[in-house]
Image 1: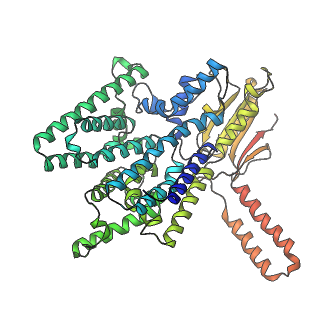
Image 2 (image 1 turned 90 degrees about the horizontal axis):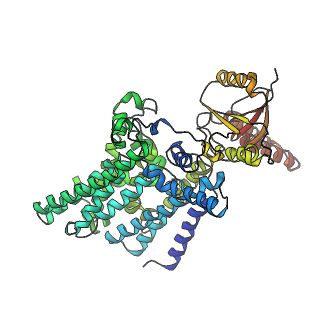
Image 3 (image 1 turned 180 degrees about the horizontal axis):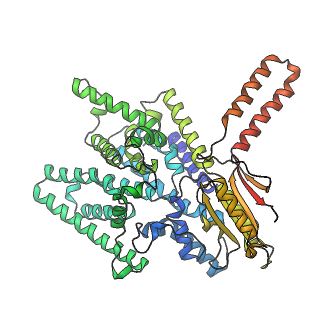
Length: 559
């Protein structure tokens, strides 16, 4: 067992993960977080006005319904149950956002447990085991991605599969094969790309069975795995078919629709085409940072050592050893296969974080650690939490919270005849409408998402709304990054800080000029000019805050 000191540090860091979840983190990583889970479930369970994106088209849906109901359905059902049964209304933008995230945060500790199990199977000493757990607890990719992404569930199922594949005497247990088939089938319906992650663990299990036991037992294990997978797939097909209503009398097989859609490269063009090296040279460093550096360095070192026969005394080679090459295989087979696809987002490779943490976690807190590595790891993850957890599109959640608090029917001083509101979101990610908690057919706040449209389209939309007789009594609001200049017809109502828009980033040239002038001024002045230097510094921070803000305006133009 590792020391009480390490245990206390780990518990403290685990508490930080929970606290950051319930704050909550306003950062908006990708629309899929909302529109593939709570947006759909809130519309179904609470009958709220929501957006059902093209992925949920009943004629050929590409998303399985089990995943969103698993991570968002339970918390939202709880909110409805409390309201209907006990007349306790906890429904709010905060609760709708935080409760599903809190459930995924609890699930995330499965990953921590998996790291600990794998360290035991690699026969690591207590210090390195504790180091891997501390590295896991401080990885921003886990802290920030404890959200309602299908990729998060894919990561958890991959962890379970790896644990099964490394279980001693795997070939002797029939239930292991059945469970493997069930895990692969379930995760395949959640994310069809899971077959890529499952390839190496399943092949390794079959190889072990054939080598250590016999071919007959391998065939028997394969049959059990197929039975477990087919039974699970059948249940999931029935659930999807019931949910989508069996269009044209046919069963719904959502992974098949997913595969057919992604085989058409013209469809992928709508989501972005990336170079094939994006995962390996960009996303690995963006998501895992120092872990990716150590992985590539160790791979290069091991490769050179293999050909030169100089790594016989390497401490990694001395560890129990079938687990380490197995984990390396899990990383590279997944990374190389996913790199064959033209659409590459960082979260697609999230599941490989488990083998990375197990193999290289000791480089940052354990026996292989030094002060430079530790400093680099801490700074990288703090920056990751700040940027993705709080800054990236970080104004959208508080803006929806503000709209719900000041413009929804339940907050209009009980006046059912108060004017409704049109809100146009411009140059932001798609706003999640479920946060407004508006029942269908009883809308007070109407959301218009103009995404990345040009300024002329935005102005035409406002002119159209203002000139429409039916909109004569409505307020017309604009939500846009402050980096986008607006006309004098728009009056500032509220600002939301911080908000980083990669599509409309801050203009750093004026800021750099201000900073340069301040340093020049400081070098040429006496101590009596301290107040002027302070004012210049304050101006810099004020300007920076202004650039990192999402603004809510009211359109005041009169005809």
